[in-house]
Length: 161
View 1 (tube, rainbow, N blue to C red):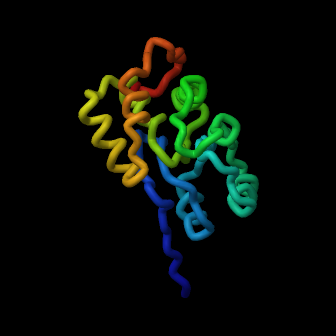
View 2: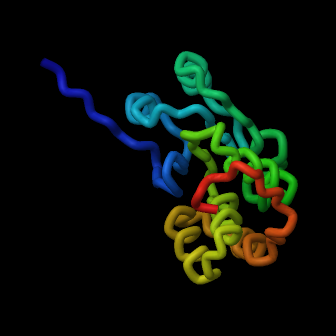
C-alpha cells in the first residue's frame, strides 16, 4: 500500500474560499494542486511556465491566463496597473473559481486586499510575509497608490468582496 504525500507549492496560501496563491510549482506539487480542483490558473511570473506544468494544466483541463510573461521586461519591475486590473477582473469572477494566482511578489493580492478595505498595515504585513526577500518598496508604493475605483465590480461577485 503506497501513501501519497501532498506537497503544496512554495508560498502557498488561501486568499479566500476557492482562491489560492503560490509561487511556481514543480512536479512534486501536482498531486496537491489536483486536490484543489482548480478551474483557473493566473500566471503572473515573468518567465514562461515549464513544459511539465503546461502538460499538467492541460491534462487537468485548467484554464490558464498568462499575464506576467507578456507584461514584464525585467523581473524586478513592478507590475503594471493594466495587468492588476486584468488579474482582478479574473479573480472577481466566481465562474473562474477555484483559482490559484501564481505570482512571485504578491502585488495583485495586495491590491485585492485594498479593494476589500483592509488597512495598509495588514496589507503590507501579508505582502512581506509572502514576498520574503523579494520585498520591494516600489511594490508597496504601487499597492498604496492603487486606485480601487478603476476596478469594475461584477454583478455576481464573490461574497468576500
